[in-house]
Image (cartoon, rainbow, N blue to C red; front, side, top):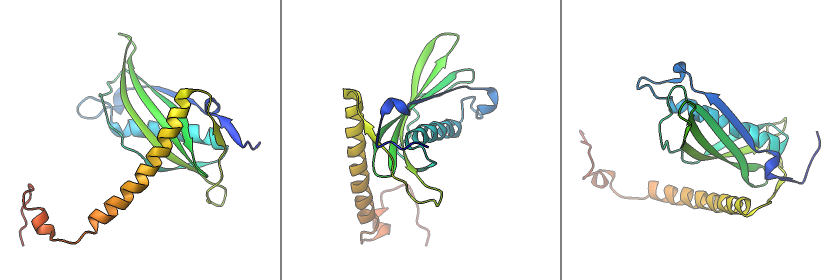
Length: 182
């Protein structure tokens, strides 16, 4: 295994495509969101592992919005790239599109960001190579990844503060659609 200090984004870019079959459908006839999430996790793992040259685990997933449903018979393509790297973590950006292969129509169904962490054989975080940014889009994505990381830290602090604030929970819920029965 050769070690590198920096690798270009293209080194680990990964594309995964899969045909959506009837057994992937839910009761509404659409593809299960959980299946799409599983495919996203798989492509994030491959992309991160290619960059780190090490086993990687999913540390967190930013918001996943299901923009449009995926139909049985469509070809789902997931495109992943390492957008940002920290010491042992990587933010993998994933774009999911679904193609009706008969009509040649393509729709964007999901975008998400997975934070993956490289670990060694003792399950300790492992230093990952830096990124060589070769165009403005990659610079933008790296900067967004850094900003997203900073916002995530701020968000955790705010949530902790709000959830542990003092005050009456009952009065806080007065105008909500709930009944307190004790």
